[in-house]
Image (cartoon, rainbow, N blue to C red; front, side, top):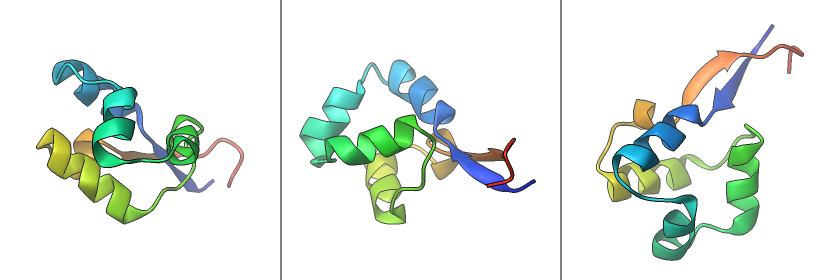
Length: 73
C-alpha cells in the first residue's frame, strides 16, 4: 500500500473560513482542471497548495493530508 493525497482538510478549512472552491478559482486563478484533480485526490503542484495556504492563512495540514491508498497507487 502506498500513500495518496487527500484534500478533505481543505473542505473543512474552506467551511471554517466561509470560502468556496469557486473563491479559490476566482481569487487565486486556479484552473478548473486543478480543482478537478483535487476532487479526485490526485497530485497538484506544491506551488498551488502554498498559494491556498497563504490565501486561507493556514498550515499545509489544513489543506492536504496523506492517506493510505487502497489500490496501492
